[in-house]
Image (tube, rainbow, N blue to C red; front, side, top):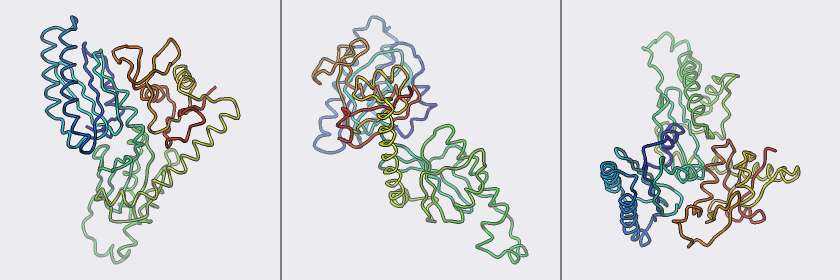
Length: 372
């Protein structure tokens, strides 16, 4: 699976306490040759390390050990390193396993715990900046899940939707005409109300920016169907027909101007919020300060440079930077502290925004607007 499949419900299940040990393996991968030639060796070494850890742990019974090793082997058999992204995560219990490909590099590690290590998944999805695309026509509506580089059709929440077909009525067609009546008859209006109800439920379950695509009459009718209590607030509109069934590359091509405009507006909004936070002394900068504000529940907005990573030692309430070669076997050393920070911020109800590298050089790569 990729991070696009990480719904709030699935994340909740991944975080549920499990019988010890729930095993998590993470490692960086490479998209292209020749760098990806090392990935298979790295994966074999990681599997060997997991086996040694399981064998050495006296808290792991023989039956559990055998079950987990079998699940790990099944997971590895499903890995296709020719289609790697930037990171790989494998979760395994005694009777189940999951394989995740990530568009963000992750540290190489093996973790035995009573739950799976999800922070790399959460951070990778947040950085992918997912969005929804609702494509509407008078007789069909499809929903697409988008990320930085792709869109794919979403088949949950009642989508795709097709307007019920009415039996031919020549007298009615003669009275109303053809093209114009398509967007004025009650069947189409009811169809748009159904689409509005369905997209509202999807957004309530998984809030994301929403982009609308379709001909102008269809978009106008959909927004007219939106209720005062639940108005549609699209992040952008693309006025173009014929895209309810994609194809995905063509839909993404048409979306790009709207996506770029939205991201420019979001970057300006984030900058204004940070400037205002500085002015009212509700601002934190640098990894240690922001980490503390997130742990205290004070951060309302956390802003991170896209490729910022830092290895640290957790020293009481503070983070002490250490060299990346520091022993990861030391539980106080965190290779993925930025991902952990992002996950903690989202869990605490903060908004997380990623900005281009060097955008926060004066704030030590990470900053926060504080609630108080």
